[in-house]
Length: 194
Image (cartoon, rainbow, N blue to C red):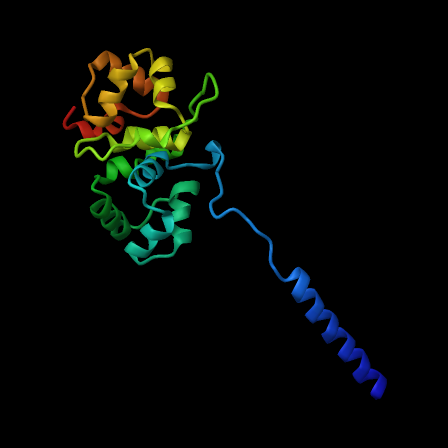
């Protein structure tokens, strides 16, 4: 029996040693950077990113689990009518924009001609800004200048779309719609009626 107690003592001693040296845990990044193909509801994520609302905060405000909100964005799940109403009231957009089923099913991937990087200084606190278009640039990590070149408009013109909610001509709306692969009534929803 004494030998058994000694063996137990050795295991406990080793466990304390392991906790001291190995018990620090593994350091992981706080936020994972999802691949573009993993995002199913790009518009909802764009609005959340542009308004600087984390998924966990949205879930807390709605009184649901963060896993549910994550499933809306990354898996394309459609929430219950009650949660759709609460989310739309909280974010200020109608359901056909935030939870457009056809767009979620299609889940388009934008073809990026060259590497690009979104600059935080592109975000302004203007009372009239195009949150969805700005958020999409953030989701895709696109520079405002690069997007304007890829679409074929002057960078100053594209910035007017973002910062002043300036409604472009139908021909330019078509270019933006073709590039982002999102209908113009969603892209320019912040610009008033189309």
